[in-house]
Amino acid sequence: MRDLNRDREFERWLKTHAAALSRLAASYESRPALREELLQDIAFALWRALPSFRGESSERTFVMRIATNRALSHLATRRSLKGTHPFTDDLVKGCVPIKEIADPAPRPDEMAARMQTARRLQEAVRELPLPLRQVLVLAFEGLSHEDIARVLGLTAGNVAVRLHRGKGLLRRALGEST
Image (cartoon, rainbow, N blue to C red; front, side):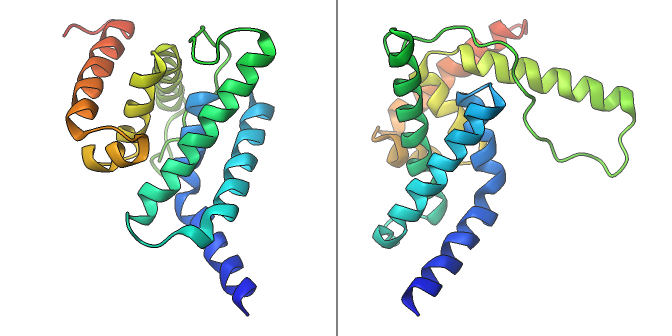
């Protein structure tokens, strides 16, 4: 019976956090096959971590911490295979746009403009230094400064500084005035 409860809880976690996990994976991996691999790694890590969840943080914070750690491991592994330093950012091209919650019947030109904006944002996020990217991705998912601090093992003040710097770099990358 215990395994049945674990299975149900795991399925609920995946359903509840699917969109956020997908966006997080897309912010670390542009290639669809590798992004799917990352999502599977995240799911497996969540399955393994489920019994250790004691409610000391919110479920969302716990899930995002596991997902972020898996994404970092994925980057380190992928980049070490390339023979580069695991946390040196390079330009990743050919991204797929972040899924959006769309109007029931968007016009094709509206959808194209949204996809182009999402693609530009996603490319700009991927080009950020990893410490700033991590904070921004979690903030985009609605985590508070305190929750981001818990996920990344930082202080809330450090999160605020990184968030401010990351937003500034994004504005410049997207050609907006600060």
